[in-house]
Image (cartoon, rainbow, N blue to C red; front, side):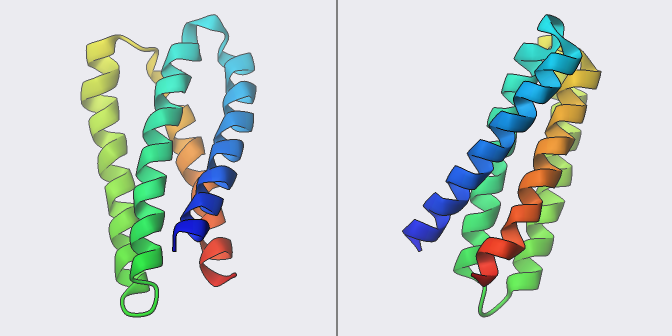
Amino acid sequence: MGTRIARFAGYCAATIAVTGFGLAAVFGARGRSAIALSAAVAFGVQLLSFAAAWRFRRSNLFAVWGLGTLARFLVLAVYGLVIVRAVGFPPEAALLSLVVFFFLSTLLEPWLLRS
């Protein structure tokens, strides 16, 4: 179990880092802090979601995967409505980066759950 989660963490971190650098180039200095926080939030949520999916992959994989998706939407809503406003980040950079990080790293899940 630990190796699979560590592998997912590595792929997820690499995906988020490469994408984060690209987004930072687009949004510039003003959006870098927002992108960095979005990357940290996305990485943590994705790691927890993958660990749960891996744990229950034989019994309730689709239920757990659905809950992980719901968790991502809730995190996005709280992040956008509370955290981004409270910290004063540019919402475009913060929300777009979080959505992109979630989307790309979610694409890794089925591949690593099957292999």
